[in-house]
Image (cartoon, rainbow, N blue to C red):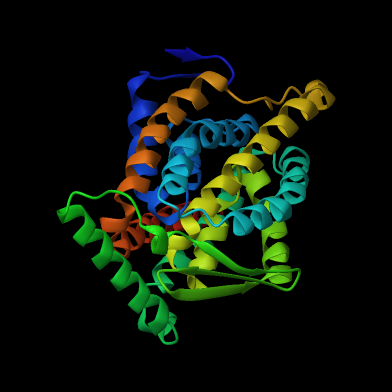
Length: 317
């Protein structure tokens, strides 16, 4: 099948399968998987124009709703956290789109940028597996262990929904701090710090075409020490809405740069096929997250990202 915008030929089942496999694992950490999908498009499919970033955002739009629905149904959507992520990333993603088109249209420069982005993600994921990363995280580790035990027991008893105690509850929400509880444990984060991070993430997300969840989720887990079971839904919702903003930005700005001959608008057909697989993968990943060992997933993803990032960076030389 030929896709004119991306100028590639590919069997339609391949994008669906790739989208499913990537999203199944990454959605457990609150990430749709666009950060792994883009290297596949660039390196395997040879899709390197600015359109690839926009197409990646289309994938997010198709893929994330199933996971968002699942986390809402299970009572694990931290709504204030989601709106803070969206509020910070939205203006950043508009800036990122401008930078991508004006300063990183060349495939070589874009691959260098991808390499350093992936290197950061790899380091964060692998660092999270070390004892140093968890020296002060006994509370979170104990909570995640108890959470798994509760859900495993529920699965054996044929239950698939959280009870009232297991839904995320907001304790305090002001311009300084956000605090919430889950199963009797309270977690908090600084509002201004999160907004600042989300803004920077939005810029990178607009350039890279990932919506920002791939950066927000590791930060919330590794730096702020929040359980993955409580932030995944908010990260996916943030990715969904900011991806819509990103796609609209690429479409609106495309006529301005028509004279350059660059392909800027998304490849809707290719993005939709990846998104169909992502939709199924995100739902399955979100449904099984509570039973799956996160350490193994982080190690696999971190290793793959490290290999990809070093490949791109070493190509500079």
